[in-house]
Each structure stands twice: as structure tokens, then as C-alpha cells.
Length: 160
Image 1 (cartoon, rainbow, N blue to C red):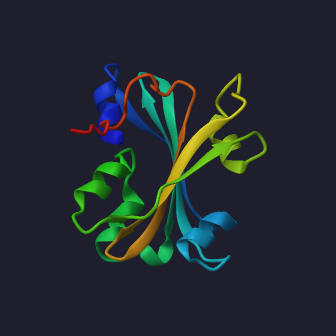
Image 2: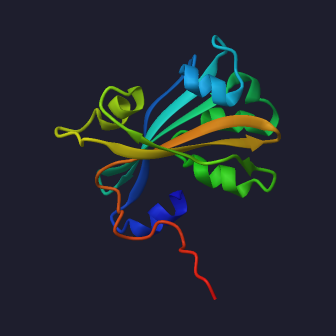
Image 3: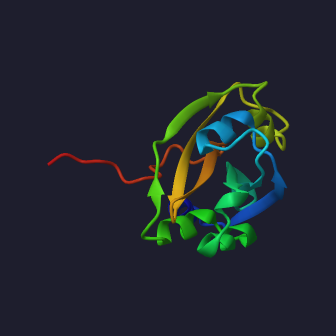
């Protein structure tokens, strides 16, 4: 998705890092990653921004136990997009994509919309567990109101 957003953004696409800390993930995140409730992870929160307008809020959870070997580089991404690194790895495997409507009161809704003066009634997001070298990480992407939904972000399937 990051590559497609870069193509759609004529005004300068960038990754704005909001935070990257070692913390315990939320319970639902720990469960989907197969972590015990008190296990530690790197939690990275970013916005994908086009010309100063946030399009996507993303939250990545990487269990500390996954940060071995070539995955250690994930801890030092800085403003580089995670997607480019994930999809460049031929051994990467993506799990199922979960979709969710997020409403006020949900922790991810609050984090994604905290910068807005007027918050929408709901926002949509997706998340997937990726495996690199067999090690899991969770990527959640929340589509903000200015996301270019009127243009296809992924190629459309066409029947012949």
C-alpha cells in the first residue's frame, strides 16, 4: 500500500513517526501474536502523510522475541516505510487481513484521530500478522478521512 500511496501523492509523501517504544501490547494484539500478556514488544505508531495531510495511521507491534537476526533492523526504521521492507523479503508471509470499523471509545480510534479538530463518527482499518523468518509482527492500518478513497489504492481484479 505504501508504494501506491507514494504514487498517488504528488505533494510529497512521508512517514511521520509518532512514537516507537518498548511496551506491552494491548491484549487483543498480544493474543493475535501468540504472546503472553506481559511479554514486551516494540510498538511503533506512524502517520502516512501526503503534503501535510495524514492519510493513514499505522501501528506496528513487534514482539521483542522477533527482533533477532535480520529482523533486528525493524527496530531502527526511523522514517522509512515498513511496507517496503516487508514486501522486499521473499520469505515474508502475510496472514489473514482483519477489517474493523472503529468507533469513539476504542483505543485505536483515539490514537488515530487525536490530531483532528473534528473527529468522524467512525473510521475503518485493517490488520494482519506478517511473518519474517517465521517470526511474527502485527501491522494495523487505519484509513483517515482524507484517505484518497475515490481512487483505487490496489489494482482491481478483472475477469476475462
